Length: 639
Ligand code: FES
Image (cartoon, rainbow, N blue to C red; front, side):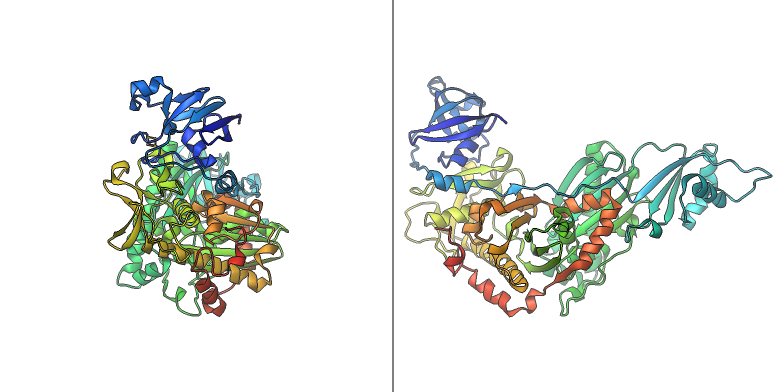
């Protein structure tokens, strides 16, 4: 990608920027404050700047007065870089201040994106064979089923073959509909072992003629807050479509504990199961629509979720997950017919679930380990999945230890007054003027602001802490002269986006109650990985790398996350993010049945540490309810 220099006056800050990038984003990266009340949607007109030298590709110029246009004014949020350019940022009526350059450099540092190092072969869990068995005659009057199995063994080396009564009932007609030309579809049953010796072939349906469409599979991540799905072409290995939405169970509780409590009410478990299946059906419908395919072509679904989500998806009694000694109903689940789970897939379709390790270390984290490849690496790795249920794995190919902590939904925007997941209109980037305390906000897809996502919240808190809006207890300073801080319904609050500039008809605020939730969530994560490393006899300094997962891990700003004490204060180049590793692992397992078998091996190899039984967990948690931490020496780079 070609880059050019962009210079901002009057503070004379120069930054290298990619051609095509929005000027407002470049200013945000450079630490140059430009008022941007509407988050970049081009409606507030606050982000006017003057092009002094060079030019930009400016849109929505009708928002700029004709005289100002003639003088070179453009909207920074609607102008893209095309060449080297000098921009003058007018003194805004609320004042303006440049963030020092080294500070700005650190503030835009994100973890390095990481692709899964595991390269799957395309070895689906199903098989289709086109065949033309000879029709029976008076001299060859073997039964239909035996005729089929004989040809499968002799001509296709497929044996042993199993067949359900359902398929058998339809067999005589199906064989004869197209003069003994058929496509025989099988489920390959070696998914627990991965070896040819353990392999059997279950005839799942017989389709008259040569079936040329499909096969496809769906990979699913069942998160406590969100559901994510991908439709995979099992011939090419390509992802044909993606879809996500909130987990409909959210109306029955924000976190796993409240879901379990709901599940123990009369009909509660049934409702939870139906709700998640409804959400998955919506995802499948969207995947099929987006890809222009048909539900009939989907052979199977591979799902990964935390243990509670897996139990509720399968309708397993969840009570003992939350009572010592915290025992799941099952970890390795046999293949389940999709329709038994209320999924609107075909009768032949089935579901395989990635196995979990313990009550609160589920298939999502096993799937993540499968995808991040730490099971096959010498590097000492800390793998953190920051979600409602924070899950952590430490180790390498010789040792894998794991634990979980209840971080709550705050980092996914849940439980916060204006929290939301990372969706269009979510405030994700914020730069606060250190003199006026006015925020410059950036929303996802430059849509009018409708809430704040997890990464936006971390950005805001970190900056508020640095410029003194917040104290280290997570409370707003009470001696600042700014209308942005006021007393609201639940105490003191900061107005991140005013009603007139937001996509809602109300102010978007961050309250002290929200801050308290964030402090607890980050305290739980910090305490979790500190205790786990302690069990292996390591400190964070001994880590070769930290891999961050979770939908929100993709957007996280390292410096901000370290400033608030969420991530360990180690060299930034050791961090990488893998995005939704649970979904990536499910995709690998869907593509390659040997990798599904590997997920079972990984689950068996992982040792779980029950943090709720560990007194040091609570001590570490209490010590972390401070910004960044009560022991400042653990965060030496945070000034
Ligand atoms: Fe550009 Fe509002 S018009 S940020």
